[in-house]
Length: 360
Image (tube, rainbow, N blue to C red):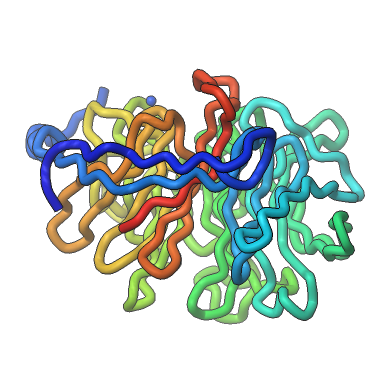
């Protein structure tokens, strides 16, 4: 690890969707010093796929990636054969690709290799009201078909739909939801907005959830978009602040993470503070992954992949200069990430959006 930016090695393969190529009373001074002391820890970068259209989630099984695109398609990319397929979804309620909504989270079933099943999170409109739902999918050739509704009616909107899903070490499905632009919903434990939800893979409520007969695992969130567990099974989440003050939170069952009552270093009895926030700087953090004591965070407005050392709270830059970054997937000391330059807030470059591989 050293200072300076090492020349990025862009290994371009094939183009054409092809294999290859955001005022708060806070104690911000300490955090600002940390930010100024960041290193850029460069690594080689390999472009694995190009011309993706607003990709949102990276999932992977063996040598094949499955990447959700907000418009409502899943891109299947096989690293061994170079084959790329753009696969359609057949769902009972149309996907609403509007604002920050659309096809968002995607996770493969633990037995995906034999079952061909997955779980998706997407935005839809019903009776002129924007909502989000979680559904089971079955892959059949180059098509995915909805087989079961696991949960629906999650408040949605043009902004703050959450949407990240991960299967935890306990085998449960964890789902982030945003406040849908209605901050008070985050403090309402009867609402599914502004929460991290926990459910069985069949959509039922686990008996050991913190609130009886409720999907709610934690609440008081604004727009969480990252979920990752460390080696001890501790859950972390990233969250967008209102005006900078983006957060990294250590998630405990049944706890209140403060939005919209507190943010940054503000305190209130019964509410959890973040283990780190960005002060007056804006990251707009999205997907995260864990590796060897660090969280690796894809940032949108900040346009970087950052590392956060859980023990020392130090932050460094792993990768930059590719634009808005949406998700992170880590496997065998390799980090995979996707750009989001075509989401209406970025500046697309040639061949955007891209799937990248970065060595750790």
